Image 1: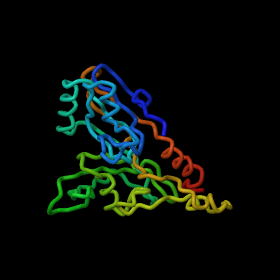
Image 2: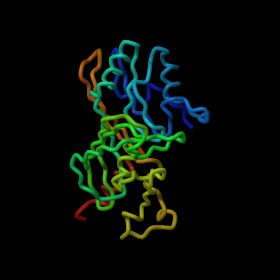
Image 3: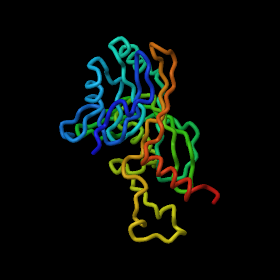
Image 4: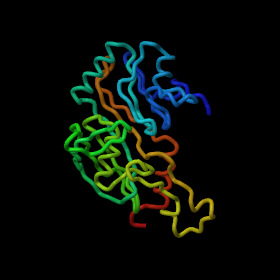
Length: 243
């Protein structure tokens, strides 16, 4: 495995903050079982001991992650998260063709000791996600998901609650998407027939808007990583509506 370098994944930087496009399969914080790959916090602290993560992204999720360069900047951004003025947008792929326009999913979420999250009116904390169709295909949809709260697995569980589990999210009912689901009219070899279009939870932290102490209001977009981009490319080629 090629050693990840912080400088290779930076997508924005000013005097007070930097942002990275976190690869999938890398933990934000250090996990004891993960000895082969440094966590993001280890990379950050190796660069500068004063740097801190402003928030977290799930291990399997890719996308934009903010890092403060000093304590003052950290407090400035933490206050924005507390007041819920930071705006985050995630892109998720689901195995259904749906047209949604600002669907507000307001369901309380509870996380058990095994880090599995569920809807629970008795034990859950307030949780709100707004979901809109970003691109609709014949068998799949890219959803734009905007979480207004920051619960563990919030987007994944809220989407699953609408019978829209994310692609590959087997923990919450999602399935692996195979090429033959969209490429039916073309003869496929045995190996290609069962070729997975995606092999991890199809969730990407696409953009974030916040206020930087150095530069004022900032909007950052993180390009899709290769695996997410490849699936989108296959859907564009084989699963377009009206074809």
